[in-house]
Image 1 (cartoon, rainbow, N blue to C red):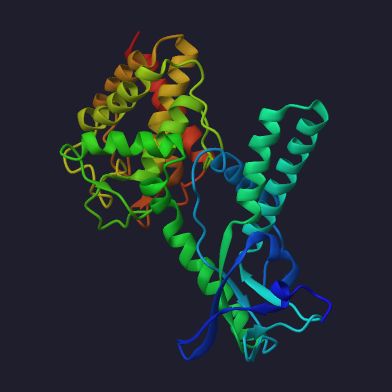
Image 2: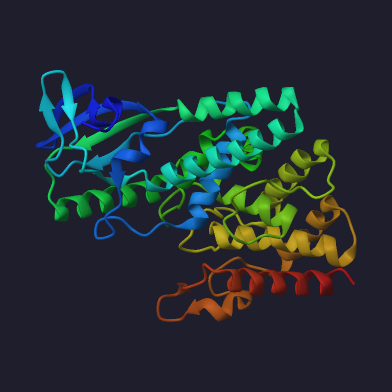
Length: 362
């Protein structure tokens, strides 16, 4: 066999999961690319933006921290054969990736970037940089990838598995990242702030979205988006480096706490009742955050001064679904706001809030 024995022969354990035979093994990353391929009938096309975000995440993490990947999932299509000393993949066959395409490509790009940096350091003769980049390269090349390989799925079962994995991930992704991610500065800030506020308001710490029946006023995910709207004027789901502009670091947390505590002053009693009030909706909360950002910019005042101006809304806004402020998105038939989860809605609500504040503060 012409291929390396490490590429073609695997050591591990086989199990039965949900009635399907699977094989569990682990390989250093440097061997992974040579034994799998993508079947676009089963797998979605590569999302270059997602791949690049993973690359940037890895490059940042490898500087100082460990990082963790869940097992990569593959389908062998009966091409993984048990032999005397393990399991073997024929030289002309590949595993089909079910889950791990973007992580694999992101890792490969990170290694490519580090190799370029190493080559430049060698050209410059910078021994310190040579050692640094070589250590990071070795770390990524030898990073252990746990592989969960389904032995005998058909293509329809592969498609179903891909769908199930990604549907479940979307449900859990946002809340768990904010709760546990130690590399994202906004998530760290939200955790610190929510800890101080836990006796003042109920905050959902795991779910990304709240049902109308939930007793929580907000979520960690919603709070993170509010802080991004305040400090960056960004209404999208931000990924990547945080930007606190020129705010002194020791002022960031007090500003954040002041904003969330202001809700308790201007929102009605039982503001978490989403059937009656809109104050428990993330979009409304982000609109208030964006209002603070815009007031600071338009009036050239501090964040704390802008937050205080929100007091004017207490007299002029009922926070009920049928309040005139929310007319554009109010359904008379359904007696509540509909189709209002967009940047357009946030801009409209924020503009209405600012208009009220400007009239009341004259």
